[in-house]
Image 1: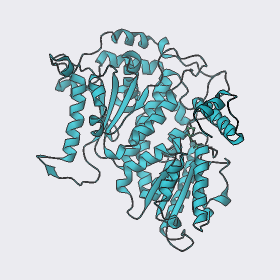
Image 2: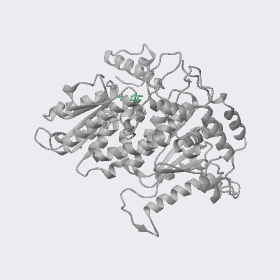
Image 3: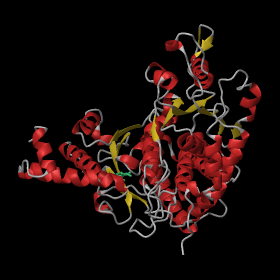
Image 4: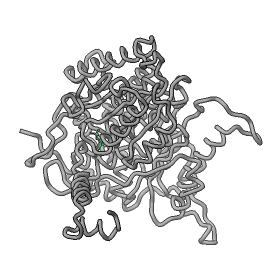
Length: 531
Ligand SMILES: O=P(O)(O)OC[C@H]1O[C@H](O)[C@H](O)[C@@H](O)[C@@H]1O
């Protein structure tokens, strides 16, 4: 018999927080935000510190958030998930009924794994990857002309693209100089054409990534690339690699030089540490860097099992998010990395968060009666400062901001210009934005007035490396999972993407048969003037 999960509004802490939210901490009062507060409201963790002095919280609020986390059993559920409980389900209705074990992808460093069976499968795939990368290095795998492969095109979409792409972008500073990676995701034919125009296909590996092995965009792009290989006189089976679910329609060894597996218990948007991300990363950076990346993620997973929110960054970030969203009515979260390497990371988190927690049904099948997942968006600073920060400071919309910064740059190529180097300028801007949002500034001219009290946190790391990237990824994965548990939604399915796919098929059918105007879909096709 499944345990009944509490909805947050059934918790005593929920009522207490509602009361506290009537009079949240005012950061604009003179002296409210002082050095003591800034020093106290810091959570030190794996590879990152979370600075949360600029949140509208008091110790009372934090105590209540702790109680809410405890009443909802968040850490207990997280541990159940890591051990292999069937968390991907909705009671009383047909649902995916799966375990959720993306954490097993990095549980390879533990003496005793949380779920042995999954870790055995994970280790087998890692060993295959290590061997494959060694064979490219030692020349056992070469093209038909006997040359080494120097490029890889990663073909996938959604979880099979966003995570790997954002991680590759974050870490390409450590990439091998003799290797290049390209990504193709959109079914817009211009996406693949632009990449195909730039590569020497004879020295290119094509990694097709699809858990289901049946995603329209990925299969279309695979066909376009295979066709280009054939037109260049090359044998696709000697260039194409697959990452897919075992026994998916793509699980066909004759069509691929190598096949790597992911498993039912790894959700697409949580799959970056599986072969979905590891093959591309391994090609670009080498196997040891993949291990560093996994190590960072594993350390964060372990740290996320701490019950005390003041000592657990993902849990604290999750609970501060609940406070801002459910009690202070902040509908959107902006992820603003002050790190060019992380320029695609907000896009990845958009999928990871919004596809996970953008739900209106609880795990018990009842409707959600409070707000579940927020809208997530973001761009790197300082670029964003010259674009949308106006709204963050003076707009009517209140946005919860999560800054991410690093004390040191990745490439160490910097110089002093007008008294400071660029890394210092970057960090000065990050800190300035945090304070400006929180404290504001009064001006008798209303148009120049900054109201302040705009909540934000800073995640501060030393340097963006494979290890810290792994930790950052796992931090956000755990945050999303904790929030999903708190809102009592199933964070691991994505029924909401189905209807659009069904209607797109209907419209494609109408296009093929030149049907026009009978159904709503056909009428829209005609009105849009598409033949
Ligand atoms: O990896 P695939 O099976 O090709 O799926 C790719 C993506 O497609 C779907 O539409 C889902 O919404 C995503 O969660 C998934 O990551």
